[in-house]
Image (tube, rainbow, N blue to C red; front, top):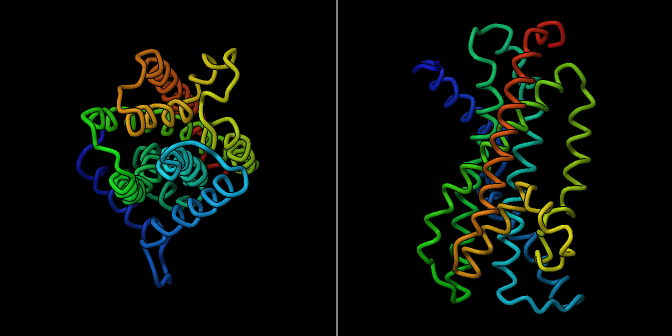
Length: 253
């Protein structure tokens, strides 16, 4: 069981990641706003003026897609490398090794909070309302975090033994962009793939956010059930793999 010292270590790892990320940068945390704004501008230009998309409230539609996708890819990529980047700590300090990937995931939650604020600004600016179903978002994002932590536990432990793992993750993120309805609506997916699509936790989060933010209603119970199921499986598999492999970490770090 984790105690106060472990929570203190998690806090310090989060702060360390934060300082390293923005070291020697003039704008610092402003990049958490500028990056999504730049990409949003590019997407709006391409899909409004070139492909002439007719999707209403398109900036909000895009943010509901890019925000979950970018959060997942950042967490998965950074989390996969977290054990190698903190090798000295792991070898010198007797703490649960699971803390290191967890701190990596939680550090990205700070940036997520900034970007959620950006989403709220666009929602209000678009004339949409903050309906009561927004209260479901912490629960839905909580399920997503469980899934991400399980995925990070799995790949970070593999990455210690097989250094190619991080490149596999990078490639998987490129493929995932097209398997998640980031820039297109879920209705564009052929009906025969709908059920399978909903087992993709990142796609499920995007769809749930659009249901709440754009449509003003709660996500379907089946969608949330699939998200919860995959998240639990991810955590169980991640923990099992991590604990089986961690006894070999000292030989490879």
